[in-house]
Image 1 (spheres, rainbow, N blue to C red):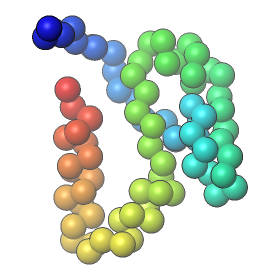
Image 2: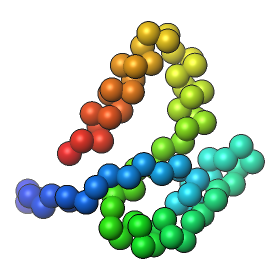
Image 3: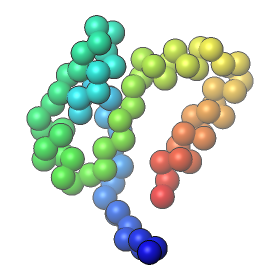
Image 4: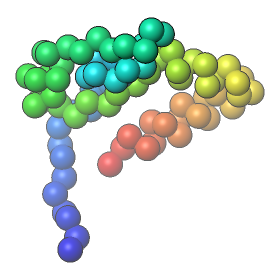
Length: 78
């Protein structure tokens, strides 16, 4: 069955470690109750890990890094 519901909540980027992702340099997270509670009920969280993203971009031709960013943003759009 086709699901035609549309989530109209705004997208909010948050560091991946704040909603509990174990992506920090020490293998831990920085769980935040406000982000995972009140904020998450009102918006759609988009976890982003800046450190991992920067490492990936450094491995790519600098001219291509902007293309990668555009591609990531396109994937976020419904």
